Length: 270
Image 1 (tube, rainbow, N blue to C red):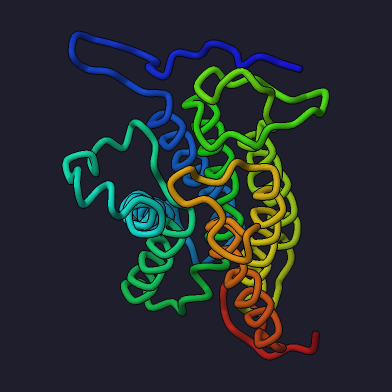
Image 2: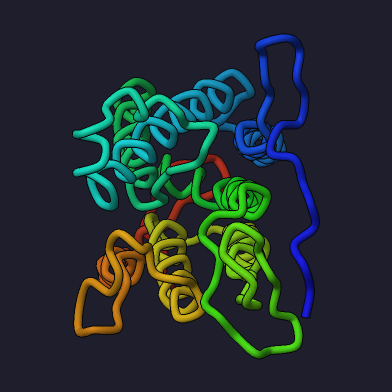
């Protein structure tokens, strides 16, 4: 059994200004996506550093706005209707991946229109950049002592002081490993060779949805929601199922359409 290491949620205080670890993790995530995007752009004649920077900015705005709005709508609508000013207290946590995904999808569509690219040409470029950001986000959850796991007797169970005295699954770290590191490696390797258009995007949806669905079995259901379906499914699982279904459908429909390294669409046997 382990005890949660005492980590101050505030990284730096300068007078009234407080820099929270949670916000810093988001900065790390977006910075990582930008650096990885530049590295990928060097191997493509259709992307340059300025476009990557613009894309990351679009994605960051979509992730933050969508993530916060999704958390409010999917998880705590009643609370925020009663306490509307708390909507802006983002440093305390309270972001929804599924809401952030919707926000990023909107950002991808807007960026595609601006640069005359198809939606899936942009999303296939973006998908391998996302998992590292998810990794840092889950580390931020861990530092904030939020989204902890269910009570367990496994030897690596951890006592989170804010959750009581019983050891729990460190589910934030499970998600950081699966949704972050494992997903990154798989997508990065898979996308290193030409694939049918939309295939990388579909694989992202399938793998993230599957990893999230599995980890939710170790994660404590939100106390204000509990189990939302069949007396055992959490909101995270309910929202992940459509991701898996649409991901599989996208991969199936992608057919033989491929993108070469110049980003040009062409028909090839697969």
